[in-house]
Amino acid sequence: MKLKMIVVVSLSALLMACAPNTQPQSAPTAASTPSNVLINTVTATPAAPTTAPPTAPTLAPTTAPTRAATASSSQAVSAQCSNTFYPVSATAKWQYRSTTAGIEPTTYTQSDTNFTANGFTEHREFPNLKTDNGWTCGSDGSLMSNQFGNLSTNSAQFQLQTTKNTGVTILAARDWKVGATWNNGYEVKGTMQMGANNVNAQGSIDATYKITAQESVTVPAGTFNAFKVESNAALKLSVNASGVTIPVDIALTTNSWFAQNVGMVKSQSSMQGFESALELLSFTP
Image 1: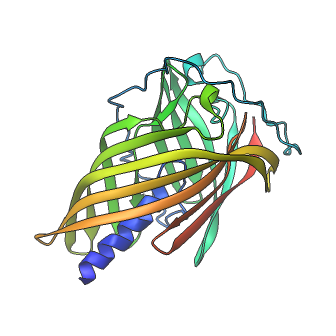
Image 2: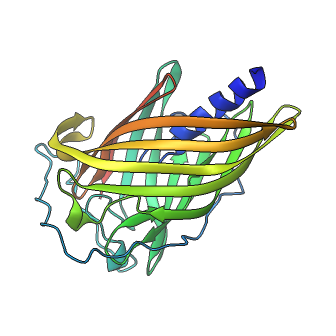
């Protein structure tokens, strides 16, 4: 029972750290940079809808950040990867502050690199850690995160490798309107080292998204007119620990706010007693 509780708590932290549209709630304290970043190939590219929904209204910040929040254009970024609600740019930088109750707040910067005709890499730098995650761009302008993620801590190391993903992570810009819904799913497998114990796991992560409102939101980077997206993610794993198979079900609810030409400006997550928040500190186009 104690081992099961450790596994559930560790996986809860992992889910909050790596679920779609959320970021790690605190940077690990290990000084080394991971050398085994997981980048997986998308097995299904989302198809364009047969009819185009009404064009989303233009959203602009009601008070400007330090610099104008306009998506940068670059010949290195393909038109297929252009999404105004999650801008892809060769020059832009985002800085976020992450807070979790009982954990010291941390900040990180985010930028884009390694552009191809239908993809790019999202690079994040924490005080003691750097991560890279590949994305694939759909023909309709939607975006798919290629992997669920990995988590390393001092007490345990858990890595989930994505073997298959479906749906989209970020809806095509033309489809953003209140009431819009979409899905994102991953099949995963992984291992955890907890002292002398080795834990193997496999299962699925399924997330549903819905745009619930269009409203004003204020963060350190400014005040924005943004779309509020509610997401619900379910992690269902079969975990084998010390010869015992343990079913693990974890649910995560996240509210995120996305401003046009800027991207995500705020996020709040709740799960298994964990509360986490993200705020945009600055945006440089």
